[in-house]
Length: 337
Image (cartoon, rainbow, N blue to C red; front, side, top):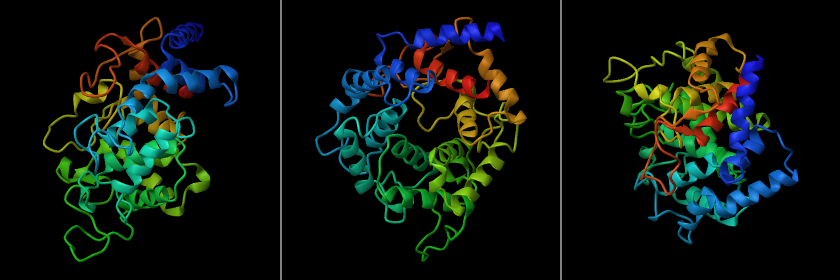
């Protein structure tokens, strides 16, 4: 235990180095547990919004609140609105810290959210998909956006998991139904040959777990139970959830990266389950051991999966120790002891 504690200390010292303002801010917030009004944290948060990656992304935003094209904001990957907002949330951006964040989220809710609660990639309800819905619901709550339309998005997301009140995709006359991509309950996805998709499930469970308990309805609680059951339907370390068209799981499950968009890794699965209260569940033991073994003697994790040249900001070179991935790893190791 002493050796593991020393590794943690080394990793934390690395993350707290002053030159990387974005990482330092989140390390103070999430690993040091500084109270919200702590002067060091307040200063670090302000600095991260003014000259870190958050600032770079906000500088690229159009005045109306979108990147770089008006409308649904799914294309081009990975600089358009839905990806920029997801990334801002992963960077710790807060709506009360910069009014442009609230403006961007307002534009998203106005132009990407359908009346039925579906976030869409193509301006119509049929463009809904679990990974997009989960990412955006999580991002809005994570950034502290207060808007009643978010509750509608959460309601659709929960119903899409349980199937309650949603007609089959074949019933084209139904007001609320499944579609070709979001094709059925329990995370069924047309992009995964109509099988349940663990990538989408992870995003949805992250979003449901991020919602404060006093805002969770009976429907959301039912969706959480179904999601936990699905993610624990196998040993997460094996990642052998249904994978349409492939005879083995994607190797990306074991490639930890930053940022995390719809491609998901084992670290994010553990993050979702830990957030829902399963940090000490024995069923996570093998996955946690995989995460632990990827940490080096200085408490660092490497960047295995990236979006180099595709986002507004570069986050390091592949196969080298990476502060953003280390931040993700240390958050999880801290929660599981």
